[in-house]
Every structure is written in C-alpha cells, then in structure tokens.
Amino acid sequence: MAGGAQLTPPDVRARYDVFHTDCPARDVVDHVTSRWGIWVLICLQRGDLRFFELRESIEGVSEKMLSQSLRALVQDGLVWRHVEPTTPPQVTYGLTEFGRELGEPLEELFGRITRRLSAPGAE
Image (tube, rainbow, N blue to C red; front, side):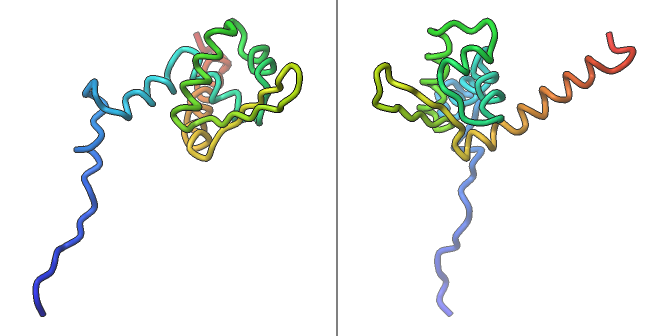
C-alpha cells in the first residue's frame, strides 16, 4: 500500500491566540465581555426582545451604547436582528445558536454570583 497524506486536525491554538492583538477571536471576546454586551447576552437568554424592551431590561444602558453593543454582537454572529417594515420600524433581537452557546455559561456565572451574594452570611 502506497503512503498517502495523513489528515490531521488543524491546531486551533495556532490559528486563534487571544493573547495577540490581531487575533479575530479577541474581538468577539471583547464584545461578549464588554460592559453591556454581557448583559445583552444574558437578557436575550430569556427570549427575543425588541430594542425598547432590551433598553428597559438593562438598567443604566443608553440607547447609543445598546445600539453599539447590539451592532457588534450581530456582526460577530451572536445575535440576530429582524426589522419589521412598519412606521416606526419594529426591531427585534434574539440569540443565534452561537449566541445561546456563549450566553449559557455567562448566565451560569451570573447565577453563581447572585447565589453567593444572597447566601446567609455572605459579605
């Protein structure tokens, strides 16, 4: 039997090294862990929401910062955006499969923190 090319899986670590500034995965990590991005992902875990519902759910976020965060998360493929052609337009946001996958551990982290803070004797 003649020798053939051996197929080996690519080394993902060599391709994506988030410790290097030019790594494309670093941008996604920055958007997910941004001040408002993390709250958007946790909030959308509960279901699809319109822009104003997101704004009301996430206290303290301005329309500008929410728009910027949503734009980045949509661009990263974590959030989808649907515009109803009405006057004014109704824009709904929800998590993609990738967004749900990343949002689950964030929601678990938030749950662990809140359980710890609300535990008797927690300071």
